[in-house]
Image 1 (cartoon, one colour):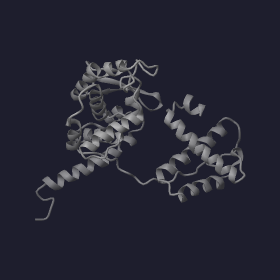
Image 2 (spheres, helix red, strand yellow):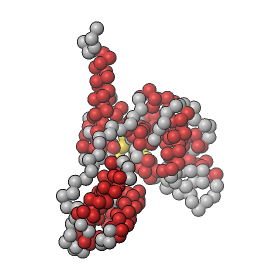
Image 3 (spheres, helix red, strand yellow):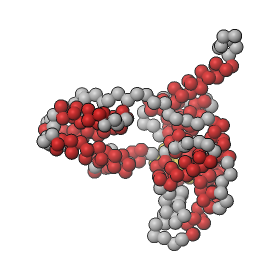
Image 4 (cartoon, rainbow, N blue to C red):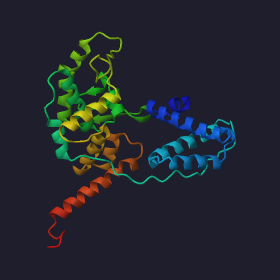
Length: 292
């Protein structure tokens, strides 16, 4: 786990997931009376087959196999063994899933609904506007510090996967919502109670002045989505940001930079969503798109 944290800069959530995956794999080896240093290819294949027989989603199986491959590669690289049972072992094929998105009209309904009066209402509005307006991951939103926002310049500094930093533009509406929260929301949330859990550097805080958690952001998105009839997940807002940017004519490379994708192939999934939009536009507007 130390290798993941120090050398690969993996997030706490990635380290936790990989730890659980490897513990399951080691239990599997123990049940087969095999040791990690001399595990066979058959041991690994049996592990994969067991995951599939449990009905796990292909994406979950893929992640667990990736953890096992990384583990054995680490053992070889450290000189602990010459045995590499996962060498050339293909990852399970994951069916392509297009990201879930909401329409521009639904995004407008979500963000234009009445928010509660008071500090929490200012915070919740700002959190939703920044998630959708900047396309941030939940972990990136909760990690924002007070020094990260330069609203006069129209940017926020974001720490993404692998602790890589990037500058993301902030639109007028999101910037106004964030200003409103920083003036009318955050100071009053922090002043509500004196607590050792207060985090003076955090941008988004809870009612005790501590840094807002991932779980709290999930609850905020779900609550306000439900009020306008939308079943929402925070990542849906990120996907919608990307899709709506492409529909508006954004270049793929610029979108890659804004989303913090290391590989443009990750960003290209949104072109499939956009092509669906383009076809819909064609079918409804071209005079010879449909039979008379």
